[in-house]
Length: 403
Image 1 (cartoon, rainbow, N blue to C red):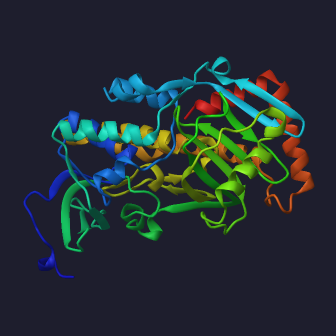
Image 2 (cartoon, helix red, strand yellow):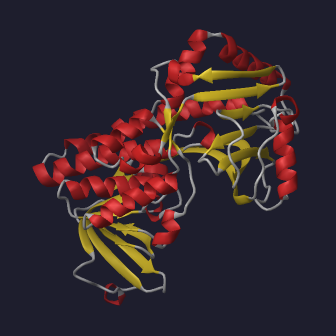
Image 3 (spheres, rainbow, N blue to C red):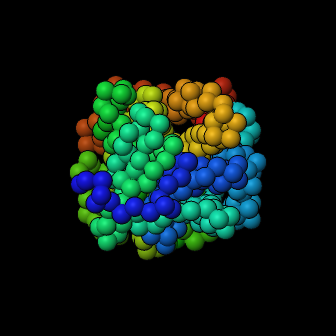
């Protein structure tokens, strides 16, 4: 397509073009807008879809502090609630860790991600922020020069182009930002863990007052409260399982079995309103910058959901990048941008290490059908240490909530 075939507009430019309206993109947009930096967010979905994407809901203490010091915490202060207890269920019984009393003595704040996104979006729009819904970024061009651009397509298929000084890719691991980094410009670190979860959102009140981790010969099962009316469950499944392969009756029966409901009490059932299969992969790019293009959130590094750190890392990276962009564009200091990748990667690799530890704790390496006896004994030792060792419990607590 030639240059003249793009739909040009004097409005289609910004000092910072942000790809994606998830937590990373919206935190970044709000902070830049507050600092007086000209920015715009491009989001391929519609506003209603953005506000109804159900994702994680456990905010780390550092995330809460970032939102609070930037005036973005009104909703979570009113509707979020603290949580600080894990319950592990194994063939040797169950035990609980009150992790808010261990390590650094900090809890999570439970606040569904779609509610946080709704809050951040409203603040951005109310403050006069520019956001284009139904606008899918196709590619980032000329990122190695002083004037990058983003080719886009609207929901009707019409092409366009946005001009920028910097582009922040907050559009995920499959987004245009990551795809636009030349292969030779970065090193990719990738690991397939060979584990899959069937993730479920049930219209049912929580059955535990704790995050539940159940280790069972048939595979892992998990329980995480989202609100007084909804609960997220997880079931380890075979790789290649389709999200709709299991009936609701089979899902609840399997959850009852693996959560050992006969011993510890029945689960409170309800309609399954959302389901998806997640294949556990870890993926990190180094560096997180290519010229004027910066990678944020899942575009920078993909984590397994076993440690619930993806959204928390995204918010942390967004604040680091917002401060660095403000220093450059407002004060003429590019030092923060030069250090962006290095600063974020310290946190990303710490999160990857704990996520990897959790994967090995919760799963047999080769899946529930063909477990390794050696690994099973190692896992039993880890669980025993977590049950009995104050030092191990403190380490777990610090890393469980830390980023």
